[in-house]
Image (cartoon, rainbow, N blue to C red):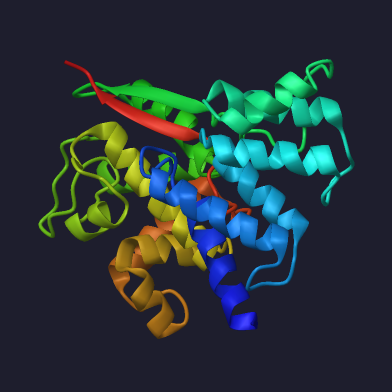
Length: 285
């Protein structure tokens, strides 16, 4: 019994955390969510759990599933796991009826006097704020700094740290190319660029985004210890872990010393894992 419950809960987690888009609204997925919600509502194969059922119906209803909207209305109408409320029931019956559900239309006809009330318990997630940046070729330092001041906060990183890394890596040359094939403003090697979704390392905004994403990962991995983060950025996190500190490479030690001379902050707040803002990059034509 517990194994079946775990399987259904796993389905909830996978579907509920799927990225927004066409795949999330796939009718098969919605049918699976609705069926699993019904299992929780009625205690089929799993222990009856009205809260779980409501949350799953909500997930599907917000993506346009009429049957799930009707089911939420029916829960409110009968007080199944929620306080009985004809206005809230009417709200969901109307949502379902507007999508063609005949049962919902009949319920609205029978109880049409109840004024639908918006349901605060089932709302779409807030719209993610979005920053749109347009990359231009050969940007000057001021333009690069303006990009950094917008990109770094997306990753909860001090812009001054990103600027110090750019200064050390490329001296603000977006076309910089090292003998190790490190590219662009933040000198991304191809493997790091691919790891953080950078398709064109010579696109200055993509490069800053990729380098900042790497700093975000390193700050979390090394718990905000700036010297270790910088050493890992230069020599790779594997080298830092292998030597349990700054590797005994003269280049790396000079690199860390040089940046800390200007940044002068031995620790940085560990950034949260989840980003709060969507960043869109466009290429200027």
